[in-house]
Figure 1 (cartoon, helix red, strand yellow):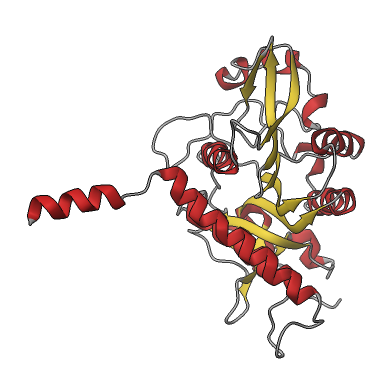
Figure 2 (tube, helix red, strand yellow):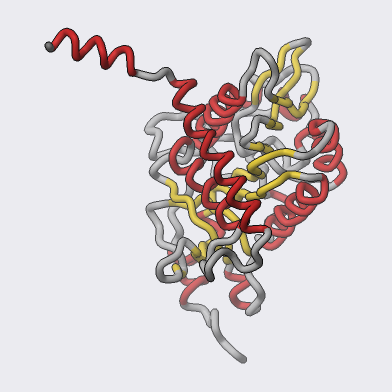
Amino acid sequence: MRTVFIGLLGELMPNIEKLYSLYLRQLETVIAESELLLQREGGLDGELKTSGYLCEQFIQNTLEKFIVPKQFRVTSGYIATPALLHANANLPQCDILIADSYSPPLLKLADSKIEVVPAELIIGVIEAKRTLTKKTLSDALDHLQNIVDSTGNAAEFKTDNKLTGYNRSVGFHNHSSSKPLLGIIAMKNEIHNFPEVATELITEKNSLIDFIWTLDGQAMTLAVQLGQTLLHYTHSARPSTKTWNKISISEFSSSDSHFYKQFSGDRTVWAHTHVDELFPKEAVFAQMIGLLTLTMSRIYTKPMREEQVAEYYLRNTFSRS
């Protein structure tokens, strides 16, 4: 009986592609349910669930299950800086935040994932979309730029010249940085000529975005072209805070960073990955998991210093004078 049992178990064991395929079937169910909710304003039977909420939760779950390491948490809410608090200004709202798990938020609303998180603890900002169209992509890029501007550090938001940071969670030197990852994840794509439209919008808006991914099998990621070869770029930092394809190769080759010097090809480009006869959506899914996981392994957060804590909590943050 023991031999027969092991044999049957071996026959039932699925491969990784089938497991990814099983997960992506849920994508179709969530899209169908969200379409139904779109027809019923306010959700079904008075529930708080909406079309956008369902899609956002699926994207958050995807990040938590497959990509984001445990030293980070996936949440949503608002980014705070001392300047925004002192000015009593509206805080920028984010669909999905990836933050340091070791440090608490300024506030967490009961029974929800909505948090107010200090900017120093943010390692990723993700815009979640049900359907990617030219308009929703344009709006998402604008919103991400507004978030960057609100930090008061837009000019240096992506710049790390050295890449000498120590990532305590990795435990060895891997050219880490504290620069946040910026991305857009959608359930499905409805943009004709997706790579051309996406690249044009990113360039036109001078966006600092790192990737665009639609779970139905489209992705735009950073790369360097070397002849006919594309070298994937897996880092949230850059030699300068510029839109990716406006960074010159000389900025990499002239840097002191050994990591940057690896990317001494012909030019910076946006790599387009998509479903075709030889590359199913499960393969696109797996590639994006790999690229984003590797990128996040090179991000760390610095512990907040005493003076930073004082800025948030002690120095007349709520003064009415």
